[in-house]
Amino acid sequence: MAERVAWITGGGSGLGRATALRLVKDGWTVAVSARTEADLQELAASSDAQGKIHAYPCDVSDREGMAETADRIEREVGPIDLAFLSAGIYIPFGLDDFSAEKLETMFRVNVGGVANAIEAVMPRFRSRDAGRLVVVSSFTQYRGLCRTAGYGSTKAALLSICETLRLQTQDTGITVQIVVPGYIETRMTAKAPFPLPGIISAEDAAERSVAGMKTEDFEILMPKDIVDEVRRARLMPSEEYFKMAAVTPLFGGTPTD
Ligand SMILES: NC(=O)c1ccc[n+]([C@@H]2O[C@H](COP(=O)([O-])OP(=O)(O)OC[C@H]3O[C@@H](n4cnc5c(N)ncnc54)[C@H](OP(=O)(O)O)[C@@H]3O)[C@@H](O)[C@H]2O)c1
Image 1 (cartoon, rainbow, N blue to C red):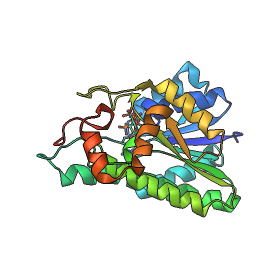
Image 2: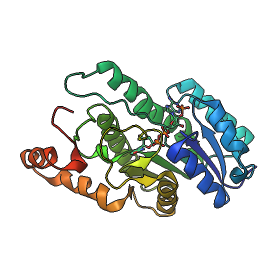
Image 3: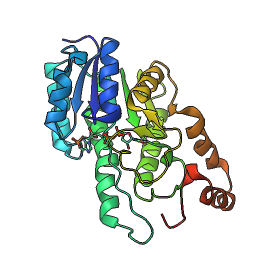
Image 4: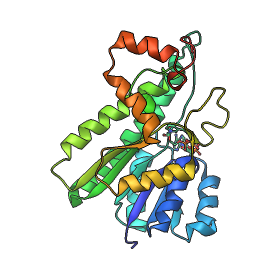
């Protein structure tokens, strides 16, 4: 059995992949999940994985599949100490093409996928009174930004879920944390048709995530200054916020986006 075991969803690419490789450097054994098995196998076979990354393909929106995956990881690799939930999708739409279908799809993956993972690992953490649950959200969780009516609402839901779980676990051996990135260079941002202020590499984001996971901080902000600007805007009166956000690049673009 491996000494420290992490389960990373969205481990086939971007932040999840970079975090898997970074954890291996710290001696972790990592089970990675995503839908595209080829990405996971390529990662597991890479020399940097040192034979310590194992592929567990799974769609996070498949509740039974997620429960079975957690079961297999614990049987084949060892008890899960850390769940790093990075799987997520971004499907943009604006005012004139508002899409209930796109919003529902994002909720199924971004929120439903996280819920399925929590349902799969929390009883295990509770029975051992140990474990770290780390949910990857976004700075869009804090306020309504342009282009994020769907995506941002899924991330706001994650903040609410994590705040509650953090409250509920505060006298236990379980730690709940939320990773709050601004922009990261990944497949998700590769074709973004708008500026991405303060963008950082996936490796840098993984480094900051792993450093944050060595603390008991609830929020892991990256980069801190940019994300904190949006975080602080939570305290602004709404009318003042709308005027400021409409003309500040970090908050958006045009009001119909
Ligand atoms: N990039 C940014 O600027 C940015 C900013 C803030 C927050 N984030 C958040 O960071 C997280 C990671 O995103 P990223 O930037 O690293 O994007 P990415 O490179 O597109 O990686 C997303 C990963 O999630 C997996 N995934 C997507 N749908 C899935 C599903 N239904 N079941 C299982 N796995 C699924 C993808 O693999 P498959 O498609 O093969 O399943 C992929 O491995 C996301 O939660 C995202 O919202 C990103």
